[in-house]
Image (cartoon, rainbow, N blue to C red; front, side, top):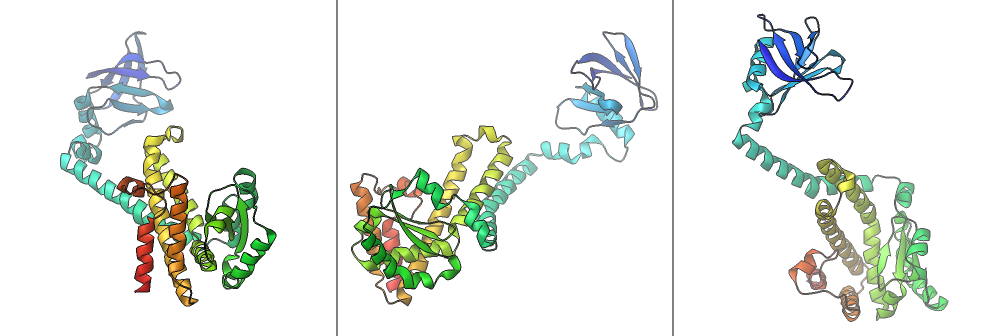
Length: 345
């Protein structure tokens, strides 16, 4: 029996028309090269027949990377069934899966649920465990240090030395209670009203933030919020989560160079969701500490309201639309105030 196909010698990319010869014992004996009128013997060579995948071309590989490719799937199926009588192409699990619509649908649903479980639960849980078990020096070097931020974002604070020292004296007792996270308060300008905590324990208050607060309790409430980020190692978790999400997306797309908006948008949205979760956790930590130190819980709500009014005045305040909340890294101020009211009750 002769089967028409294409022959590749394994040394060049040249494709040659050929015919595969099979003897009466159902074994491959020769390949006839059509153009060169040459006959290659394969009677003593080992060969492997690739399993069937739908109606794609079939491949038979020989020693020295030689290859015979043809579209005569049924004839190759017979050869393979003769070669391994206990396995026919129709019993090939890959072929069976590809041609079973129910199994395809079930596999797709399972894959979606599995990926959702990994992203929604597996990654956050794994990142939390990793963040809380890495040595301190690892967290310290995991992101850019304050020195790098000073070169790229921040400028020297314009607050008077007296005002800076006054605030440091105010928060000093609370920082001493959190020596495990090595907290240190610094002041910077060059950024709008904000407060942030770096993994190495540095807490940054910007000048605009300090100036908009109307009481010491508001400063303390925000300090507690940032201490909550440090205590729960949110920044370290976020970096680990970002890395894991990026690896998953690259694994699914197969090419990091094509990581465009379409492939990056899911990662962005999931990262924003993680950020909102971290903010709520830090809010809860701050309110718990405020209650523990007999400081008015309203001070936190007042600080959030002042920040919202500040950004509205700057033209980048919150909108009432659902979409703006969806794309926000922080919960809406109204929700944060409701959290305060829940603690008060």
